[in-house]
Image 1 (cartoon, protein in one colour):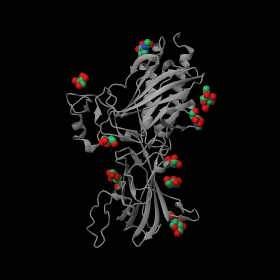
Image 2: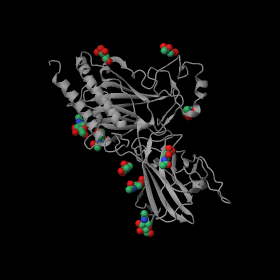
Image 3: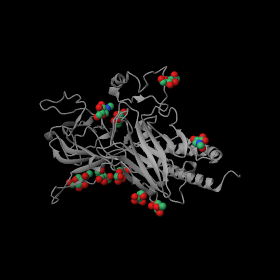
Image 4: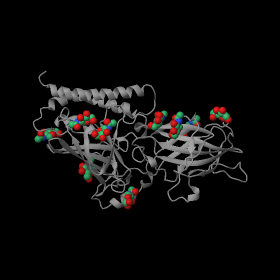
Amino acid sequence: MGFLSSSASGSITMRSSFAVLLVLLAFSSTFTSTEAYDALDPTGNITIKWDVLSWTPDGYVATVTMYNFQQYRHIQAPGWTLGWTWAKKEVIWSMVGAQTTDQGDCSRFKGNIPHCCRKDPTVVDLLPGTPYNQQIANCCKGGVLNSWVQDPSNAASSFQVSVGAAGTTNKTVRLPKNFTLKAPGPGYTCGPAKIVRPSKFVTADKRRVTQALMTWNITCTYSQFLAQKTPTCCVSLSSFYNDTIVNCPTCTCGCQNNITDPGSCVDPESPYLASAVAGPGKSTNAPLVQCTSHMCPVRVHWHVKLNYKDYWRVKVTITNFNYRMNYTQWNLVVQHPNFDNLTQLFSFQYKPLTPYAGLNDTAMLWGVKFYNDLLTQAGPLGNVQSELLFRKDKSTFTFEKGWAFPRRIYFNGDNCVMPPPDAYPWLPNAGSKLITSLLRPAFTILASLVFLLAFA
Ligand SMILES: *[C@@H]1O[C@H](CO)[C@@H](O)[C@H](O)[C@H]1NC(C)=O
Ligand SMILES: *[C@@H]1O[C@H](CO)[C@@H](O)[C@H](O)[C@H]1NC(C)=O
Ligand SMILES: *[C@@H]1O[C@H](CO)[C@@H](O)[C@H](O)[C@H]1NC(C)=O
Ligand SMILES: *[C@@H]1O[C@H](CO)[C@@H](O)[C@H](O)[C@H]1NC(C)=O
Ligand SMILES: *[C@@H]1O[C@H](CO)[C@@H](O)[C@H](O)[C@H]1NC(C)=O
Ligand SMILES: *[C@@H]1O[C@H](CO)[C@@H](O)[C@H](O)[C@H]1NC(C)=O
Ligand SMILES: *[C@@H]1O[C@H](CO)[C@@H](O)[C@H](O)[C@H]1NC(C)=O
Ligand SMILES: *[C@@H]1O[C@H](CO)[C@@H](O)[C@H](O)[C@H]1NC(C)=O
Ligand SMILES: *[C@@H]1O[C@H](CO)[C@@H](O)[C@H](O)[C@H]1NC(C)=O
């Protein structure tokens, strides 16, 4: 067993025990509930709160507020869509700060016609620029809901609804059922409405507290598995110590197919680029990507740039290959053991994420407002970049065996596919090929288990 040097087995053990830890964490949750689970944001959820503020002759008026309690997952334009099913024959007389997309059949009404008579109304936010007399606080942002870490002041969205043909006391009112939240695509699963302690409101001058007549909450959680089957992001790697650039794995997000689907991607040199971008499919929001070997809309490149005595430096570049998407308020979550000693970071914002006590190896990065918080559509301006300076911890730091590369990256909350570990750039003369290739199958199995469980 001469080829397993002690340092090699040390680092492999660390790696595997980390993977095992994740597997265990994922297991403990997956088998106690069928809910979505994100190991880096275990309590992440969107909570929808209904506060009944007054009873009316035939129902009630409620303020509905959605709070995005997810650390890094946000909802960007074209925004959220909220649906539910009424328990009985309720109707919506009027709404402020949002509207239903379809009025439905109100033929049984004479005189005043309700805003919506559907049994399963679908609600969307109003657009910015809505007249002030049709607004309420936290409304009218076109359905955009920022994440809790990135912009807590814009992580809530509200509207008011006046419900008729409903119960008029807290004993007779029936809670709506079957909530659906779209962002605008699938991905969220909502639990049942639960009656909770009535919300309290403090007046602006803080001298009086009022409270809701009745309050119920609905919790929605996200699962990448439900959201889409194919990945949307991949990682490429390079280093100063090896000329090899390890590209994203081929066909990560799809394969180029000129024969059966010639319009599946766009050649940036093509004279037809502009018409293709404006062409069919624009309304569906389907990505239109630049032709690459990976076909992903987004690539994150991690370059190990410099080695100093006490520090080392990484350059991170995020490239947008999608001609149909400007990513507003984008964010990145990166896991690397040296994040507990991040010393300096240029032109991005940063916050450590510490889902488990004692484990400070995960960081959330996002753009500086009005500078690079917008990742523009594919093209010469379609990228943002930053440099990170880490302080070396002598007991763990090494350039060997891919230690300097990230363990996991998410873009806007979705997992970015990494190249296989044995493809990572090596240190010159590193005799690690045999070891990594021998241990890779075990690691790959663990890694895919982690992936499956984390997103199942
Ligand atoms: C939703 O998120 C909030 C804030 O992180 C947390 O306090 C709450 O327990 C979560 N709810 C569920 C059902 O996970
Ligand atoms: C309904 O209101 C009564 C008092 O008016 C209160 O005691 C009771 O707890 C309330 N029930 C619910 C479900 O809120
Ligand atoms: C809940 O909503 C889904 C999708 O809108 C629908 O298929 C299902 O029948 C609904 N269930 C009930 C009990 O209304
Ligand atoms: C209901 O939701 C509100 C707002 O999200 C939250 O403050 C409150 O703790 C929730 N109540 C329960 C019992 O989850
Ligand atoms: C598809 O087109 C690209 C560039 O136009 C070319 O490099 C590639 O070989 C073609 N692939 C197939 C399968 O024909
Ligand atoms: C992205 O933003 C630029 C500049 O604001 C705009 O010209 C372009 O049409 C936008 N693209 C999309 C797909 O929204
Ligand atoms: C995690 O590490 C960062 C960078 O050194 C530090 O600023 C932060 O305080 C640490 N957080 C915790 C909870 O240890
Ligand atoms: C790195 O961070 C850890 C935890 O914050 C600390 O114990 C350690 O001393 C730091 N190492 C260096 C070299 O600063
Ligand atoms: C650079 O790394 C690659 C593996 O990605 C390896 O094949 C190559 O031999 C390395 N180059 C040097 C000079 O070590």
